[in-house]
Length: 324
Image (cartoon, rainbow, N blue to C red; front, side):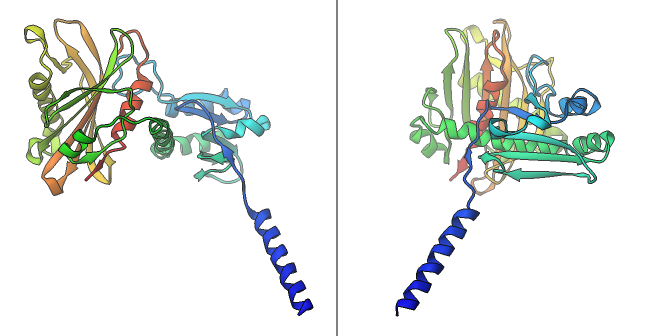
């Protein structure tokens, strides 16, 4: 019996020690929203590879009035000093000149949560080709990580919007700093003040599925829809209303929200006669079960401020939608 107990204790201690050795303890990641740490040798960063990285990740954000606000801020870290705190960035792009070629995406390598994209090539041109060929995949991986981080921060203090959620049949994560300005059971307008004169807003409503046709008519129908609803629901003084800017053609994309096909429209709005304008993003989420599009839109009025971070906040909030 004494021998059996001794063997059991030895096995137990061995297994515990083995489990402890194999566990990885990762510290929390850090960094500003939409800031990519680019790990690359100085010679690569300062030459054509660096230009290709900037062309992919630092291109201007679609739909903003200024063309100098990049999609991501880039922070280069030479490969030889990539250690310690430098490895804790939430989104990392590593450029490796090796004997293999390809793009790999890893999760929680040095910290958590974290997305690390590794681009490899045997020559500078191969690295550039990999960046260009896989640009959409790289951007999507980083964007999803940053949306999750933004929503994590938003969830620290949420608005009580139960009435709106019940009326329109969905849930959403909205920061408590927003206030409900209009709520008539069919249309909801929520605002957040940025200053005494500058603000951003969210709007939610629904339209029948046949309101938006597929094909070449899609963007036309979306613009007609939003302009007519805004004119009806948010009337200005002396007939002045918010509408889509005529001189700036909106951009239409197809995306997925809550596993449902969604039209994403980005453009500029204006109030003619009041000299007010700014960017907007509109999502029409297909909800076949309820024979409708759930429409969620956000816009920003901040003529003195950069607008990328505000539009990104609106996008992240809308992407948290879950239809009941």
